Length: 107
Image (cartoon, rainbow, N blue to C red):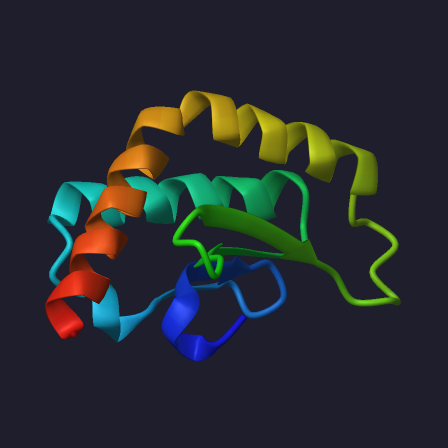
């Protein structure tokens, strides 16, 4: 994944949320919803979570953790990612459409 493809990310280690400046013109409500979802994930599970666009424009979720992080919940991570996909399905579909328009406008 490239920097341009990353939508946003949150880290338990740095206790920070990152929104790619390329997507700064998203409505504030959507930015807030993304921030809340990712920060809650890192508070409950730990590690780092990243939302990014794959090569086809689909929104994907990646998680990572430090090798020495014994508190990271790998099983919970998978369950929480699936829960997020289900609960945020409509939002993710809208973000995929937005990305497709953004790419088309950039051409």
